[in-house]
Amino acid sequence: PGALNFTRKAAQKGITVFYLTNRDHSLEEPTRNNLRELGFPLQQIETSERPGDVILTNREHDNWNSSKTQRRKAIAENYRVIMLFGDNLNDFIDAEDKSVEERSALLKRYGKYFGRSWFMLPNPVYGSWEGSMMKPYEGTTDRDENIKNKIELLRPDY
Image (cartoon, rainbow, N blue to C red; front, side):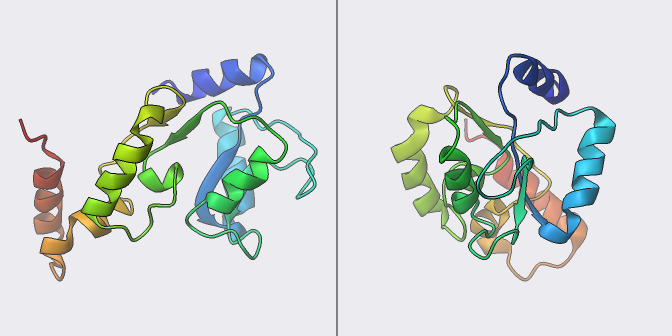
């Protein structure tokens, strides 16, 4: 909720909105169509990488992979990044395949950015956080059991 209004207002103020997705590059056009159909801003831009492209997909270039680091660097070459939004720590820094302890250390190091220029929009359904959090439940194939385990892992400890 609010994403459409927020991105539209940003675009109206001259802010270029980029979409970094781990969808495969072969799905870029359908992704663009989905965003356009929903009314999200798709500004035309000029960059050295690919003129007019604000959707940056996984495997679009040889060094663009699921960590998004190279895509963030490509944007930062031509733009001042003022905000990042994501549903996963990997949307902000390279956190792929990190343990809970390693992710905690990254959060301690970079935590000052959250709520200021980095904004987490949690996705409790899926994400790379599952690999680090679900280790005790590896091998569990029962869908209902996996959902129950996720809910338990997401409960705050208070």
